[in-house]
Length: 254
Ligand code: PEP
Image 1 (cartoon, rainbow, N blue to C red):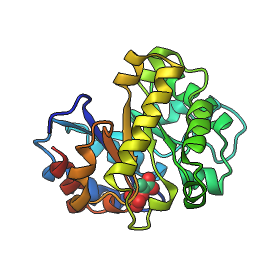
Image 2: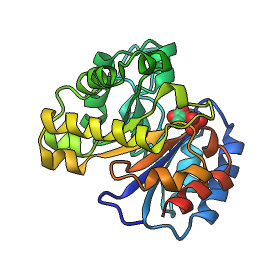
Image 3: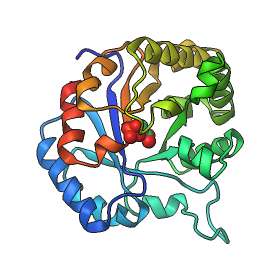
């Protein structure tokens, strides 16, 4: 597939997988994906498995991501994880503002913006998630919601930082539901987000930023979604928990 930007496909394992299960999964991926050069491949295990997975993928084309990070560098923040702790395991990417954290941990755009600054401050790359709920889409609010989230979560980034930021457009109604956005819906939202980046930064920055689609991506719909002009990869939940299904998504996207 001929793409303007290199595809980046990340698996978000969420609160799944013990260390042993994580190693099983990543060993399978290493074998299945050994020859893939066309796609940046990222896995985001739970914190407890980062150390072992990091060792297992040392000599591979798979990169490591974390599912969250504190906006603080060190100190009395019980239960939080700092950038320096992630860097010990050679983590490269950090998912921020996933809709589940927005919903259950009440994360706001202002907090996500602080976290994005901290991620860049540590020379890591944030994957910043945005997306509307079904009620917001049905009320015709999709663009308004995306605009607030993109402008709020990416506030104060420099152009250089923005180019190293990945955005994941994840319509909340498509996450874990088996419902996928149609090609037209996905392309329309991605193009809208890229248009916002033109206004917030400039056309050159907007052209370079990779925007992933997330929401029930599977091997059967990956190719069509990845072929859309403004879709530059995928953030995959359920289908990343099994090596064959995640590997097939990546192979079908090439
Ligand atoms: C996600 O949670 O980021 C996600 C896209 O999940 P799923 O692929 O299961 O819809």
